[in-house]
Amino acid sequence: MTKIYLVAGEVSGDVHGGGLMRSLRQRSTDLIFSGLGGNKMCTVEGTENMRNWVEEAGVVGLWEVLKKYRYFRAQFDRTLAEIDVWRPDAVILIDYPGFNLRLAKALRQRSPGVKIIYFISPQVWAWNRRRIPEMAKMLDLMLCIFPFEKQLYQASGLHTEFVGHPIIDNLGPERGEFEREENLVGLFPGSREREVSKHFPDMLRAAVLAKEKMPETRFAAAAASVSMARLMRKQVEASPLLGGVDCEILRKRTHELMQRATCAVVASGTATLEAAFFGLPYCLIYKVAWPTYLVGRLLIKVEHLGMVNILAKKRLVKEFLQGEATPEYISNEILRLLNSSETREELQSEMSGALEQLGGQGAYERAAEAVMKAVFPAR
Image: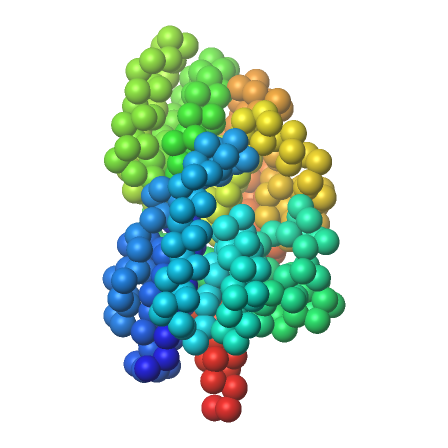
């Protein structure tokens, strides 16, 4: 039996890990999986002793990570000890760079014979390209989901494959027979408590301002979980500004709302690519704790934050970051999109063109094939 140890630390990584594991099993039933992940990875056939930790591990921001330093230190040490005992043939690290790059470095020193594969490249091209030569020494294979990443990693001598973005596979089945509802604005504050706490109040204030100028405007917000729906309802009830503004909270109906809304406000993250996939015109907002933001400003070296804009190499989608993420700016963009079908259609067309760079269906299958070649080079 061939042993593969995987590490994913966020919900999105768990989804991608599960997809990759299932594609690997289709190629060989002579595989055993273990590691750290979430519900998707834990339920794949051939998995044993997979720790479900994504709810605890999925924190964002420098300050938030520092508050849980002891927890992460303990998990790091435990993971190294597990790998020492289990002795896998390969370790696959899925995104989550703060933990996984440190793990790769430690593994290369402790277990030089194990294959170390990275799936879903960390965005070091955005915040620290100097780490790429270091990564080339740690890793045996990098599996990229964005086309421009391959050249950057290959130049360092790291064997790199562009496998395409799994979003094409994951969202295809989510397409439904929905029609755009006139004057319906979707609000997508994020999937984590910190994101919802930072973004949703300003989205609600923007809704008030937009409705004052355009009374027929309606609002609906997507909640990623029961707990996030509960938090968002509390924020709606606690807002003295809402007045006659009604905001429906939709739990686990994100992709439905992306297909029904006329336009949207979307927090930075995977949801911005999802919105573009469904042809939803939107603006992007992003707010974090100020220490995290200030450190990020020093490190991030890309002109745009939104991946659609990065792919297009220009600002298709307006970005309102930190101090610019005000109700006034957000409401003005909502009204601009609502009031011009021509503007919406142009944005939809340009977003579609940007997404064509992500490759066609079959990202997990291509990734699995690359893993099999790395683990079984003689086949």
